[in-house]
Length: 145
Image (cartoon, rainbow, N blue to C red; front, side, top):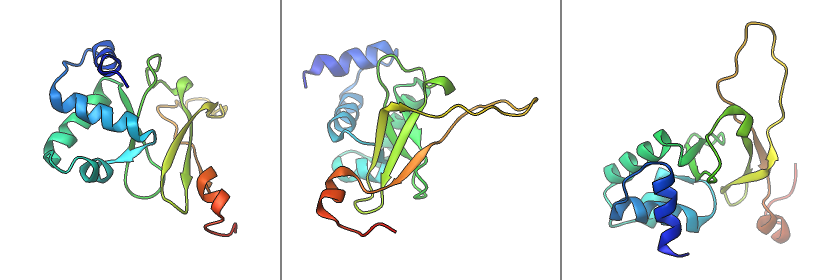
C-alpha cells in the first residue's frame, strides 16, 4: 500500500504522523484483522512496548481504531474505515475463530439493534460470533460442537 494511504488516515483523524505511528498503523492494516497488543509486540520486535501502548491509546482516542472484546481476555484492535466515528449505530459484527484464534471485523454485517426498556441508554455494543474462519473451516481443523 502507498505511504499516502497511511498519512491520509492519520490526517483525517488529526493525528500528527511520526515514524512509529505510521509503522504501527501500516502493520495493523497489513495484518487485516483485529490484533492484540501482544500481536503487535510480536510483529514489531524492535519497537518498545510502551510506545505501542501509547500509540494504540492515541489511535483509540481519535477513533482511528476500535477495540474488540472477543472473549479471550485480551482486547483486540482494528483499524476503522474512513467514515467511522465509532458510534453505536455504526457498530459491526466481529468473528472469533476458535481454531486459529484470530478475530475478524465483518464490516458488512451490522450489529442487530435491540429495543431497550425505558430509562436504559446504550453506550457500546460488543457482538462477537465464534466458530471457524473460512481458512480453518476449509481444513476442518476442529470439529463443530
